[in-house]
Image (cartoon, rainbow, N blue to C red):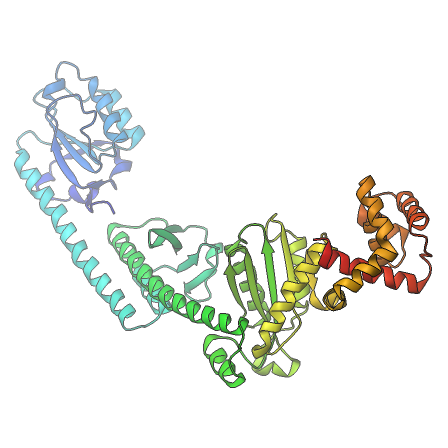
Length: 511
């Protein structure tokens, strides 16, 4: 924060300057004086300090009074407060160009009577500045003490925010990096509608975690001190909350690890710890797994899940593990909506995840999302395993299906797991071995064409759309399949056998 000072207007009320006159630059009388200096040479480059009141007799420019215009320009560019001059001894008058430049840039030019010693002015000006600084320091300590006491007494961040709003006589808000309000004072204030506001960063661990929004644009030194102390205390409060959140997150992570790793704790233990950590055991739960080649976008995904959970009035959870995100998604029963809790949930969680993927809400990453079936809290390991299996089946059988529910591919997975390998090899060789050999020899996709033809219930158009080829190309490939394999594609029994063989082939053999 800048060193506090007093305005030029306030200095002009001092008795020692009662005979002084403001010659020009009146619009700059609100400039802040923080220091005082005396000009001995006309070359001021590199010597001007922001907030300085420069005094001179103009002796060094007595033969070149037109240089005064350049001096005013340099003072303005350097952020000086004003120029105080004794012109009667060495100058016949202030050049008009200097007065015009003073008016243009708003730097006050003050004429001081020749009989007033510099020491009288410097002493009283610095006394006034130092007194102001002492008052601000005292007030700063008082504000900091009040705010830190609130933090130590665990009054809550809302109480701290209310105190700051009262101090500044203006609405305030604490906003996270995602643009969401952590707290506002008054609580109903919509900070995004503020027409005239200022934003101040809140830093924790050398990074910006939030910003303090003040519905005021002009702030005096006292208010600036209050804001600096408010930022510090807000950072302490956020750091305290972060420590609590980190502890809870670690405990949740440990709890999730136990739920995902056999042997799972006993039901009553899961229910007890679930209530403590925000996993309501009265709800049904689904596990969704998001996988990609790289780490998923934690901030984006967490934000989307938080917004959706707020809309549904439930508490969901998310864990990030390497290139995988694990979402724990609660679902309310109609009879769980007590006292207005539990809004109309509308879309299922699977539909919501599909909308995120289709709308590119997660970005343009190469994601696969598997969703397990609905389970009770102590059965989440099963839902998690199902979500992983859904991704595996989706990647191998339906690479264009980025969101897959286990219920949709459950039979495929069971067929792939249940069939004996040696028996399968023999059956596959008898029914589809010739097609496999033909594909390997000619680099064709007859097996894949047959699989998606059966998947699409014998529809030439749907198969063509899925494979991105012309309908006639599908028709031609099917004719080649009949010629090579020598079986009837219209026979339901042949269709079932071939479909089963292809499912097992793509899941277990052809990875």
